Length: 513
Image 1 (cartoon, rainbow, N blue to C red):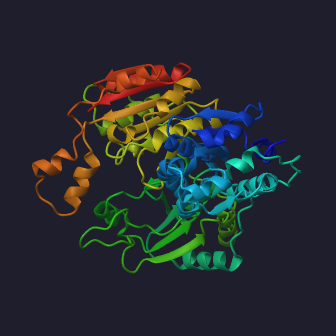
Image 2 (cartoon, rainbow, N blue to C red; image 1 turned 180 degrees about the horizontal axis):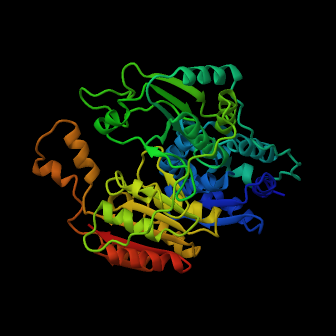
Image 3 (tube, helix red, strand yellow; image 1 turned 120 degrees about the vertical axis):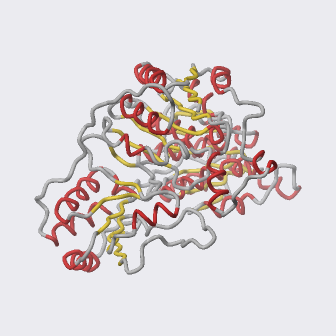
């Protein structure tokens, strides 16, 4: 058995059974080993699609997938979505091919400082120095990724094709988040009992779903606190029958307004509210003066356990959680704008859907209108690097093949990783991609104003508009095998969205704004 074959067998034995691949010459032995039917191989036409898909897979499956990337340039192409995955706490196993060890000394065209490229965004980095080291290094890499870390294994060509022997069995241990110390929980309980003024509990990580979310709803009932998330969250369970969460606004001024009356902020698996960017004469930390900050659970701790311990300390274990009621669906007519789009989404989202949100300008202030929709999961961009949504939707659909995925993105963002559509068609994934086409980088215009500039000159404006020539997403989608429609009214958007959710396979909807 060669090193590549031992790698695939070890990955499968460790529970990694999906590989998002963009291979090259140095990975041919690994590519041949992927013929193992126990490993599902998914071809991606750009490395940023592969890394983003692995992010989406972990967010929904809770277990890592692998990527297969080609040398330093291939890894570099995937780094932006590895950044997003790292910020979201997603576990990813990167297999990165390298030149054969004896070939590196000749500085061939594709030779690079591969370790140096990988290190900044890898929590764990290993290089297989011999064929027999491949299997144990692979097991260590998966173990490092499993709790939600970026783990990278560099695979030289000679380690891949050399004789490796039979791989041994390595123990598979499920990751267990740390339990917060009881003294900290007791301290927060005392603060809440004595609290004067409004209290905000900010949830992140695993606390935004499942048991953690339910317990947070009980805390809201027991104490009257408000529940919120940061503007971006890795994954939220929301909709009718779930505990509703508010969203701290994106821009500094509305965020300050939202937070100004709170005298206590409790954080669970997240940090305190921080501005997304720094602006002249604006604060970076958003909590008001005199507001006390209480950390209930750190990012790597068990937020559900912390909330359960807090409820016990408050004697509130048996209260009922506050839940969101189902809103009567309203099908809008006429003009497309953020409100009518959100109402159409709320009326069309099928039960148990997965919504991947990179809508930026269009959805920033209107997604609250979908709180009363059918129960669904929402995934957002924790790292802020655009080109996130269509790859993450790819991974989410493969992780949950029985659920519809609705992917929302702007036209500028979509162009970063438009190659995802080809994989959607190739794998026949149940993904509806919605592209909000305003023909400009509207977010940049808003940021330009936030910096204090009153007028936009013609050269600056040209850098914020993408209308010369106009992008034709219907043609782009059809060219990659995805059925596509263009809509210009709210009622047509709702009708086409409902149609896409009722039919198997991918579809694209270009929303003309």
